[in-house]
Image 1 (cartoon, rainbow, N blue to C red):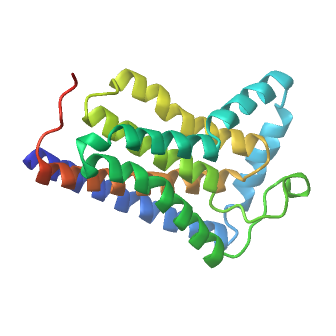
Image 2 (tube, rainbow, N blue to C red; image 1 turned 180 degrees about the vertical axis):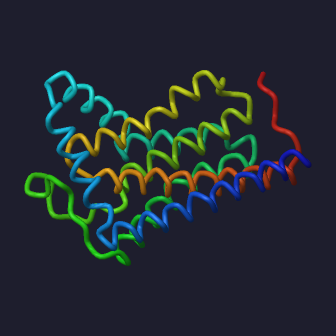
Length: 213
């Protein structure tokens, strides 16, 4: 129980730090101080575009599609329902919190359009909702599955590479500026750590996890 409490506190602290970093980055974007690095990264990627990289980014995009990840997240939560609400609910909450946060940010932040807005559409792009969702959903699911001794850490490392690659794919495709994606990573980690802290708090009250059979 003490370990779960300490983990919950550590996760909450990490989430608070990422939220602070997100606020700092948002201020930079609002003030236009991030425009230079965004343009340089966009131009650098455009110069290195090639068919093989296009295909790889398409694959990453498919693996990180919101519909696919939300469905997978809900399936995992359903499969873990017998282990208690403290295990399944944080996984269910992660996509809901990510979507709600994304909607709030879109409503509150001045509109910022993607580099390739003429092709992608003139929709607000800060922060990257795609990246926020992929980061929060996969981090929470992986964390809970590891803590429940279902997912080996070696496999979790591969799973956690998906949000990183998903963000890179969005920048490569001109759907987002780099700072949109960086903000998505930070917001996704913030959501994930708070959901994971909720899991640890529930675990502290309900006792040890059910062992595998």
